[in-house]
Length: 471
Image 1 (cartoon, rainbow, N blue to C red):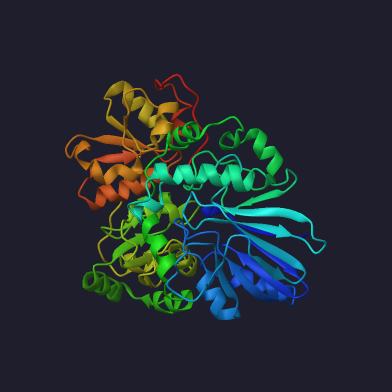
Image 2 (cartoon, rainbow, N blue to C red):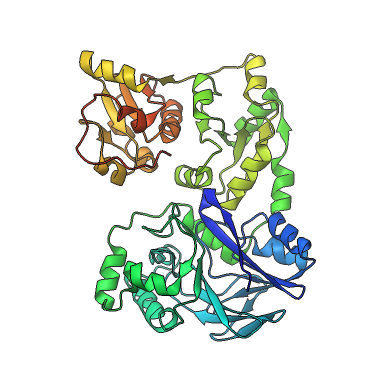
């Protein structure tokens, strides 16, 4: 049986495609459905079903657009209550895709509607399980997300349900089944996922802490809940969009791809209260940008950092991008529910600067220059990495203010005294710099090479090993 994993690294997200005898099914698609339509067209196949493992929190699924464009039925597991037409399956129900079969296995715990799909080939052999956020490679789904939507669903209750689902529904299955999860390392839906994106169930029983055969329910709940950090603020908003429905991405793209001259761009910003989001490279941004704009570079974890730093998915956004990058930025914003992009700056920052309008810049300091400064006149230094990164190794005397908490700790940054800030490699520190500039701070600089460069200097550091995360 051929199962095609369609992986999107910037979200650590995996969708799945199966096809047999001209019929196809898609599992957990992303917002932009073109790749799935193209894949089915290549096989000359009709998409019959769009299977959803649960109401996702970390992205807005493409199920509605995909169903509209193909006529496919949307399928959810038991207890799901979508606000649109969909099939709510029963536990054990079978669906046919050509001669393949897809069996519904209700596995509540990550959320109450969470469902695993057992794939059965055309010979009747069980091939694998599409587990959504129930079972990852090396981890299981965090059980604290649904409570942000339904208060009665405490993390302890959900963790208990997840224990039962794993023991009673997943672990009794054949060891040679292939596990196909919805996410890999880098997703905020778990805490210790592997970089591998598939494995056999038998091996997971050996290596996954959550599948230890001798673990009691109480031990499971304690281990699962220990070390969980607060989920990004946009997660509950994405869940509600996936439950209630949303605008077509085509409609959003038509609205958002409106290019404005500098004069019109400024007028729209003033009239709508839109946030100016500059997605250019951090070093380029530092040398010149529109006053009050925020920099989140269009690389790597762009969408997640938008979700961390912009609390409301309904926030109006105006884009400043590199040439011809506006559609990519709009798409990646909409993947996580930020659908209110109202346009972009035609001609980019170059057009703004040429128009003679006000421009700002921000200082950067190399790790070697910071080393000299620490000897001569040591500045206050802030580390904006995650606490776990800071705890692994950091500059002696640095103050840890994780980027996603910066708005709650602005009072810690001095207005008069010069200070420096760093992250892993310069990406997050420029996001922090742009926020500080927007809020009125001027007397500071960030380290473009981040702790990766600082680690090469003689600046005193704590004794542990620095993690490899650079963004």
